[in-house]
Length: 185
Image (cartoon, rainbow, N blue to C red; front, side, top):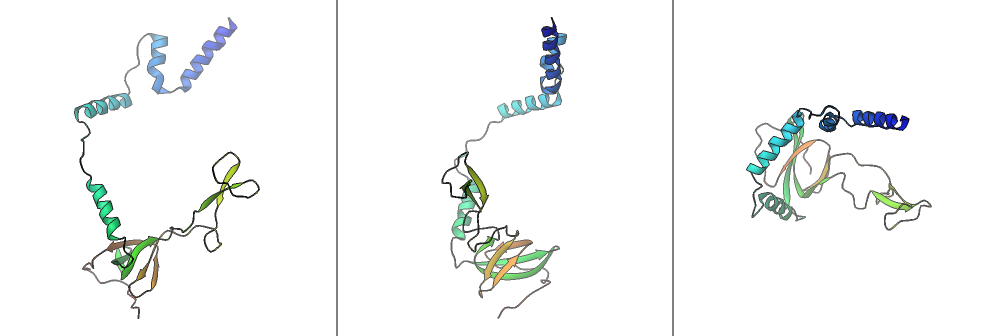
């Protein structure tokens, strides 16, 4: 009899922790009638009915993929001229013509992590005896670069920017003069 009481108490305890998702089950077991629908259940039912009424269209092409491909082709050119407008506090601070791609400061030439064994030797596949550690950058240093971009101007100057920017492959007409301009000679 004690085992029965202990088992019953355990079921009630677990049922209490099971949450409202199983309230209908427990209500039916103990009271013989289902619990009222929750707003989540009603929302799911409505969503399912809408999904049945409006099916997913069968697309024959993808404008999104075409745009991504066109962008990749456009900037797959080291000599491509771009125009970069550096923005701070809602104002254009500077603008440049840039050669090549605008790049992230967080782009790396080598992986940022590597797998090693406990003795420090390289692992060539993941296993329970391998650990992930930070890998040195190509200059032998460790750490993370700041967020931002970098590019090279058409005059060859390196520019790095941590902030908002806008880039175009054609010069844009500004309605307000830049707040800061540096002429590179």
